[in-house]
Length: 101
Image (cartoon, rainbow, N blue to C red):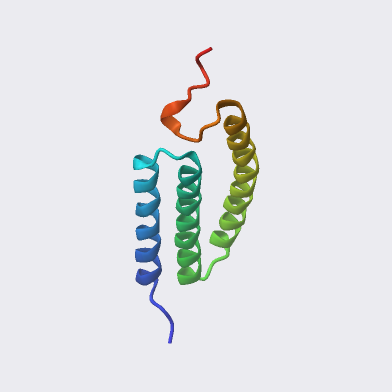
């Protein structure tokens, strides 16, 4: 018994939708960061589902690439969030703008 591809794709679409809604409505930069990670993981799930359904390894390679980019984004993004919080003492997106002096 195997799970059909439609179940994986439905779950990936729901997770991606939740991430998108979170990005659009949140004002907390850490929650925004987690929503972007959720969207990346949903894309990974869809890639793996298609890869397994078609019996090719291309999707696995793409997931490895996306995970590498997500790890680099997490390292750089968290460093930026910590720096912003130390300088501005807030993580609310509406409260800071780095282009104004």
